[in-house]
Amino acid sequence: MEPVSAIKSSILKSKSGRTSYRIRNFSLSDRFDIQRLCTEERVEILTPLSRACFRNRFTFILLLICIILSMFIFSRLLVSFLIPPALITSFITYRITKLKHKIKAPFQHSYIEYTDKISRRRILVAVTTVEDDNDVMHEQDILGFICFASHPSERQSALITHLFVTKNFRHEKIGHNLLQICRRVITEETQYQALHAVCSRFQNDGYKFLLDHHFFLTNTWSTCVFVPSITDEQKMLSTTRIAPL
Image (tube, rainbow, N blue to C red; front, side, top):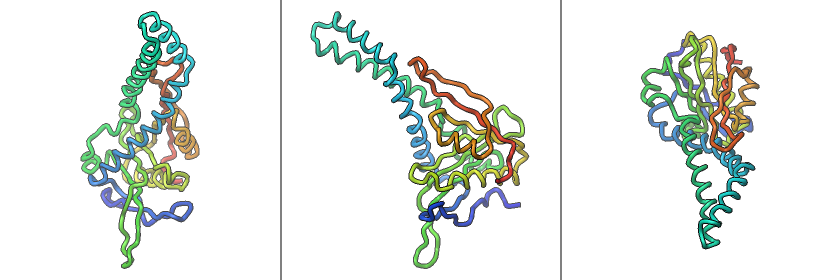
């Protein structure tokens, strides 16, 4: 059995063949890149969420009512037209900002625990590699990562909290290989019998990806933003097919 500290794949090629990369264990020097990718992931969720809030019929009706009321309060027409949009925009932005701390929070544990307790929680990263003139491979940028740990409420189960690949490198089988190595690690080094993953309703590609890899929907829950019918629905998916496909 391969030691838990020695996970490092051979050099892999993206589907298009243009990028070489390897998958290895997380190291503390990667933490700033991981934070950047977590921010990128949350922005991809919050951007369509914000559009949905500001394009909602309720928002337009509320804005119209506030403008009419402000015309009776303020004598200047310009002020009565400017203040309501500013107030509504500020309030919805505040609600979304409060919500973002509940959406894909970076990690439940400190980064040091992902290096000291890798038998219980793990981050695997996909890193581009470049060969120099002496045929030595050097690592460059992190393309994506997968993070999994013990499920907080399900016994003998692992929970994938993050599986993210940067937009420019999607549909290149990088996410597939990250999930495959994750499954191999779980099969060889743990006693987990099931694997779970959390996905936002605004991560359509991620949701389809998990379904294609034999996950099935087991639970959903929603967090209301304030605007009626606009929620960030979180989906819990599960699979008992732990072995690599």
